[in-house]
Structure formats: structure tokens, C-alpha cells
Length: 95
Image: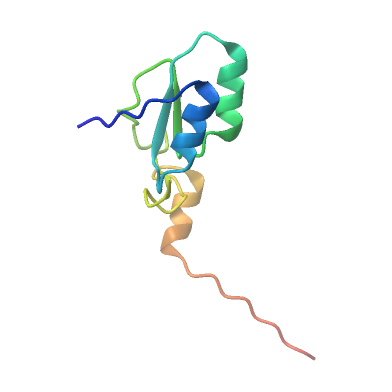
């Protein structure tokens, strides 16, 4: 299934994407380097694909994970993934 929302321009498209409750993947197709750099800076998604299909990330090769309702902000296969299986503890002692 594919959902499509019409945007008046690139900036509104990014705004629409960033205002959803999801943030797993995003994809931008353009030859305009300025738009690519802007998408890299402000497109809030776990995996951003530029001028390529937005599926088929490989664990161990291309870490995968999203934000908001689309994940835990960590990447399966990424350096921070192991931390999901740990529990942090801070200890303070006055001597």
C-alpha cells in the first residue's frame, strides 16, 4: 500500500513528512544538491534514501530503524543496538 499526500513544493513535502507520527524511512528523488543537503539535515526519519528505492536495508551492512511510532531510535545492526539489551545504573556514594 502507498499513501500519497500532495504538497505545493519541496519544503511543504518535508514539513508534511516531519509532522507524521512515524519516522521509519524517507526517500527523496532529485538532482538538486541543495534539496538533497536540506533533506539530510531536516528530514526526521531513521533511514533516508536519496535517489534510490527505500527498501531492502541489510542488517550488518545497512543499519535499520526509525523514530517516533516507527522504532526506538536505535538501529538494528548498528553500534547502539546492543544497548537495548542493557540496563544503565548510576551509583553515587558519599565517602
